[in-house]
Length: 102
Image 1 (cartoon, rainbow, N blue to C red):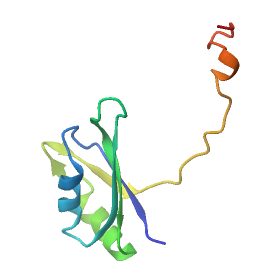
Image 2: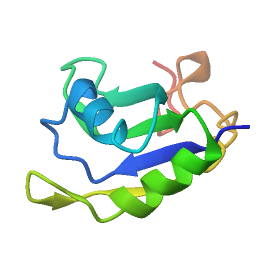
Image 3: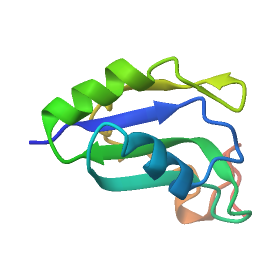
């Protein structure tokens, strides 16, 4: 299984094309997901990148962790698995956070 990389501390102006250009220096980028705000479309400052092999992913971590983009040092490491978010829903049943019904 190919390592999924977390790329954080990105400048908000960073685009997917810029990230792909940077990471393609160490190999083939098989997928790239720049996380954006659903309403404004602006970057949230982090992304997930998958390289075509584990060797390329390791090289990307080595080369780009603490790499500077627009004056910011980015963080690149292996992404952790997504945590389960199936906890209680505070708005279920039209209740406000204080417990009062709407």
